Length: 422
Ligand code: C5P
Image (cartoon, rainbow, N blue to C red; front, side, top):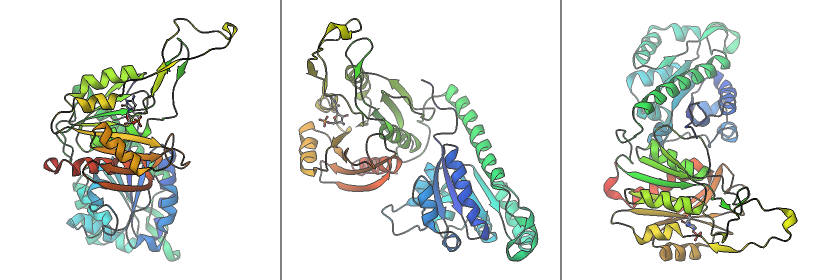
C-alpha cells in the first residue's frame, strides 16, 4: 500500500466574498469536489446577499459557515485554518483584499485566512475604477508579498453592463491553479516524507501526543480463499488518523483497508483480529491515546481449512470461536495518563448499555453510533454519534461528515487531557 501522492485527501477552504461573481464560486466548488477534494465553504455576510449559504451547503463537503459565533465550535477559524491544505477566495472584493493587507480579522473568513499557514489563492473581481485605484493596487502588492497567489481579473463584461478590466477569470483557470498548487505540495511532501516520516516537529493541539488508531473491518479466514468480514469501510478510523495528524500528533494507523492518508502517518496493514491484536499490542505501550475505531470480528472460524473447500464436499458447518477482545486487553495493561477510546456500533442509540460497556471495558471514552441509520455509519461519508466519557462527559454529534465527527472525538480526548491543551 502506498500513501496518497495525489490531491484526493486534501481540504480546500473556499472563501466567498460579496461580489456579483459570487455565483461563479458555486461552479468552482462543484469542480473542486469533482476533482476529489474536500471543500469547506466560508462566506462573508455580504456574500450571502448574492448566493444563499444553502447552495454551498447542499453541494460542499460540509455546511457553509458564515459567522465566528453562534455555532457549537467556539474557535471555528483556527479549526478551519488547520484543516485547510489550501485557501481559495473568490471573488475577492477590494474590501477583503484591504482587510488581508492590513491584518484585519473581523469575520470568520478573514480570521481563518490570518490563522492559516496554508497556501492561498485569491481571485479579485470588481469594477475597473476600483481595481485600478492606487489603494487597491497597493493592497494587492502587499498581499502578494505575503506569498499569496493572486489571479488578476481580466478584461470583459462587468456588472451593470460595463466593460473593462475587473472581470473574474474563468472558473477553469481558478480550478487548474488550485490543482497545480496542490500537486506541487504533494511533490514537496513526498520529498519531505522521504527524508522524515515523523510529524513530531509540527505544531497543533496534538503536538507531542502519540495516537494509535485502528480502522476497518477484520477478515477472518475460512479457507485460503474465503473470509468472514463485516461492512466497515474504515472511513471513520482514517478520518480520525488524518485529523490527529493534522493537529500535530504522531499517528500509527493499524488498518484492514487501503484508503489515502497523508505522508507521515505510520500505516500498518493487517487482516484478521489476531493480526490486529499483535500490531496493537506491539504499539500500545508507547501510545498516549488509542482509538479503536475498527470493527473487529467478534467470532472467527475455529478451524481454518488448509485448502480451498469445495461445494462437492457437501454441507459446510462452520464452528466459530470468539476473537480476543483487543480493547479489553489494552485496557487491562493501561498505563497512567493513557487514554482509551472505543466504539459501540449498535442497533439504536442505547445510551445506558453504551455506558455499561464503557465501564466494563475500563476505557475513557466510547463513541456510540446507530448502524441501522441509512445516512450514517458503515460505508457512509457521514456519521451521527454520541460520545460518552467515564467522568460523565456527554457530547451529541448530529449528522456530520466523518471528519467533523473525528474533530469532536479528538476535542473530547483533549478535554480529558487538559494539561496537553495548547
Ligand atoms: O464489545 P464491542 O465489540 O461492542 O466493542 C466495540 C469496541 O471494542 C470497538 O472499539 C472495537 O474496536 C473493540 N473490539 C476489540 N476487539 C474485539 C471486538 C471489539 O478491540 N474482539
